[in-house]
Image (cartoon, rainbow, N blue to C red; front, side):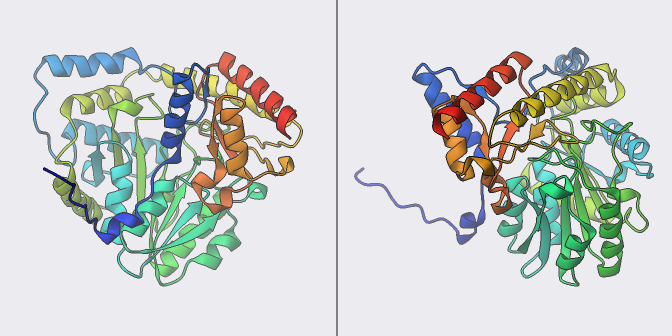
Length: 396
């Protein structure tokens, strides 16, 4: 055969974005192939092993033949455990039929937006924020409305900000607290105002609480918007196992939502992924119902790393960094270096051999910042701080 037929993509494909952190990983691997030693601070992935009791549960399930189809919304025992856990940690009563288990948390984002938002509907999302939010809103044909998160608000948002953005065209508001990429959290005052507006304008809230167990100044899970009056029937809680239990590669997430919406999300899952592997769900069951000490130990270590990284960054001329309240990222302000975020991120990669992500990868409001994941060893973080300091000294 001679020649290659051109592939004519549907117009909707131009609306999909991507995750720059994975692009950074590819470029970092290319440097390593040239013999460079790169410190990886770009991915949002705990550097801890999955606790052994969770691994054992999956192995036992495999050996017992749990290799067949499962119910699309999840196996009953896991849905019950998720309902119990979410009820206990959020202080709101949830039932298993409100739970949909998916291969990772992203399907919940995708399915919820597709189920709720159509042409002309407005969806408010955080900027800077996880880039898949805007990507799926665009793909659904809805109108994305950015909610700018500001450093002076601890990378949350003010009640005035959310009031200025929502109206009767608003179909969905997406929030993420603790937040990727900044580690910030939404204040209870702002959650209360968002809840009031949701009731007034009758829209839903997708609250991404995937980092809910990695919150440093809270006794337990931080306040969820689902607890405010009128919000139990207007809230979709997105959570999962990747961050809390160091299970990123297992691909196990879930959504807790009103029953009528859960039915529709399940229909979308039938059409997309059929089900989530049974042995992976058994691992999730062991994670929720088994020992929690590994989680506590991981969070304590993240806190120690956070304190070291924040202090080290604030010693570098031209860089300032506020202390994040949760997750495992810092979002330092680099405007004092006099260069844009992409330039600084590239310089630190190719001159300092520290892989991190430009703030603009998370939206236009990320200009002037870079994201650093401190999900790496203390030794590597200390070395990375040295490299950043020396690179800034040479180039700026």
